[in-house]
Image (cartoon, rainbow, N blue to C red; front, top):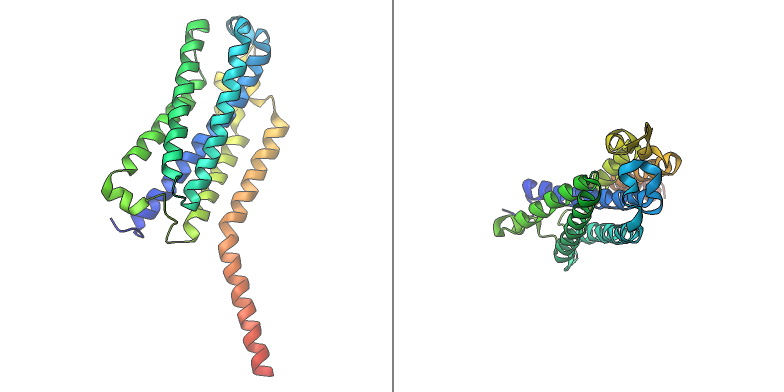
Length: 235
């Protein structure tokens, strides 16, 4: 498979997108666990069972957020095509699965359920499987995340798509995460409505700016060249 083939470009975008969404899910999962870690008794009888293990859930929050930050760094490395991008990504995904599985096991043993951690773990597993498939020689020749993309616009477009989807996830978190965050009739997925709304729109704006950055630069360059040619002609 050629390095600059259409399929290779698509697979590269898919990889960056999946890693970006996994990082977003991980960060939101870590932040979401904060409520239970600090005040488990406020979220019903089942969550109250976690109160004696507050220290452990605070540890889950800190470690999960750290893995989420590693995920963001992995995305940046993948976009830039740095030599250690693939290895760092695999390590980050493996750590995410390890922490997530332990979190799931503890929650299931204490309160009989581990949602919504399960969704984050399943997403991380899916991303890891895809990246392992990328290592197949014929596919790796086309995607090779450890070298800069031959197409300079591809990484920016991949980042823009990821940011736009992350924006959508953030702005609609109260909808898709609501069923697993409903306690006593209150949707706690919407507890940080203002903060998440600001974050969601910020991510969306950044995604739009990235998407149109290259076309705008080309347009301004053409205008500048045209003006210079006009000035030379009139001179």
